[in-house]
Image 1 (cartoon, rainbow, N blue to C red):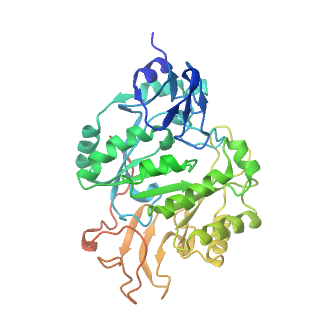
Image 2 (cartoon, rainbow, N blue to C red):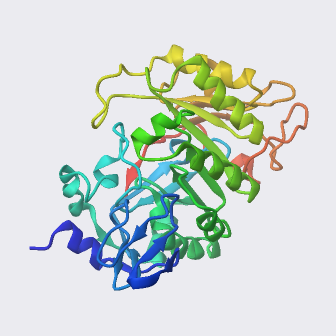
Length: 369
């Protein structure tokens, strides 16, 4: 009987984001761990491995495929009201105790995640684009596991998607390298990064290094990708005023136009000690973001309980230009050039040129493909 490792190892091809070293070792630079992987061994992600001096990487399958509201990613400044066909593979370079996608992200690390074997199905890049068309998606998104460790597969899909006129995006922990971002950016339009904490001790607990993520935010923005940042606010972990101020000031220093989403933690996976995040904490974080100079701050996961922080407001005249309730767009006022209809100020983002076609008040729930 084939094990999950056997199945995944069969669904690979030689990667591009690595360099060969002496004695059949390789250095992988898909993520900022920059694993030195000796012959027959695996990287920290567990799904990139060295076979006789060549790095084998995930290829030719999905373990999750779903049509989502783009707002679920969350992207609030990327084609609001549109569908995003979201695909995921298996594996991650972090091991967050509160991971909501642990069944796909923690394979070959947590035996309970072996059940993910039943999710694996083969697909081609052309098949992915066909699925996007069938779902009437305008965006293809790599998510659910950490997309950096499956970058080669994502690019093969995005090449087809871009040729078909689709936008392409990553939903990532941001533990990137300069080489990976250079490889990806010709095929990416938008990059959502989780900024999980401004304390390196917290990042070490999750399996990462804070500075690597900060560097990725700066690099992605400098490359011209549309960047949105999410902080899952966890009581007792990263919810102090001091840390929220540090996060907001850093983002504002990169660009005050970067949307910052502060979202609510709920008990999941191995982190069941902290209480779920109350709406008041998200409102406090949002107010800090605004005071720090960020023009677009959003509070997520608690629709109807976070006042105006679900909607997009013109930074010049304070008029609501996009009103939201959860994943639903209830009002859309931007012009086809992405400008405020009241004062003409340009709102940064990736907007439709046909605002009359934005879906309003419709059924906006994820759908398995």
